Length: 248
Ligand code: G3P
Ligand code: MG
Image 1: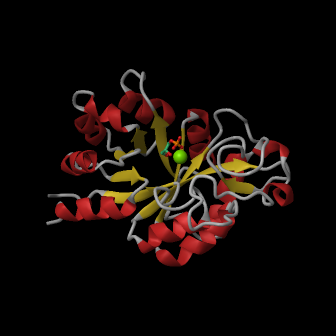
Image 2: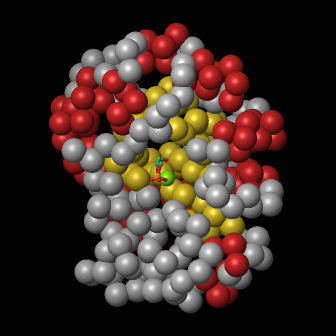
Image 3: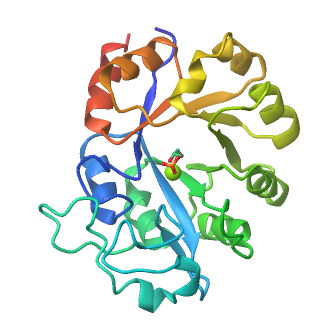
C-alpha cells in the first residue's frame, strides 16, 4: 500500500466522551489518533469556543445561542449531555485550551469554522491569529461548509491549509474546490466517494481527501483501500486498528 490513511477523531473521541470537550480530545490522544477534528464558534465577547451547534441546547444543560453569551456565562453550563456516564461535569473548552492540550502531542488539528448560520465577526482572523500565536501553523487544517470562509482564510494567509467541506449536490466538486474555492483538500461526506473517478480527480488536481464521518468498520476498510488521506471518525481506536491492517 503506497499511502497510509490517517485517523482524525471527530469532535474528539466523541464515541466515548462528551463531544468537543477536553475529555474527548484527551481520549483521542490516548487512543492513538493522528489528529482531531473540532468545531469553533464565537461568544458575544469574542472568545473562540469549541462547540458544534450554534446553540448550547443539545450538548449542555443550558439553552440559548452561543453568540448571545459571554464566555463567563456560557462556561457555567455542563456539557456532558452527549455522554453522561463517567462524566459528571464537562466544560466547554476554548480553542486556546484545546491547542494547549494538543500542542505537546504532535497531533494534527482540523478546525472547522461554523460560519454557515451565524456570520461571526472576523472569526477567520481570530482563529488564524491564535494558531500563529501558539506556533501551530504547520499542524492545523482549516475547514468550513461556508466556502467564503475557506476563501477568506486563504486570502488572509495563503500558506494556511484549507479543506472544503461539503455534502452532496455540487457539480464537479473537485474542479470547483480547486479553481473557485482554492482549497488544498476536499472534505466530503462519506457517500460522496461513490461518484465516478472521485479519487482520480482529486489526485489530478493535487487535492488531499479527508472524509467524514467514517464510523463503521466496513467503510473504514473501504476508505483505506481507496487510499483516502484521512478518515474522520468518532471511534479513533477502531480507525487505527483498521488502518494498521493496511500498513506495509
Ligand atoms: O468536519 C467534518 C464534520 O465534522 C462535518 O460535519 O456536522 O459533524 O461538523 P459536522
Ligand atoms: Mg465538524
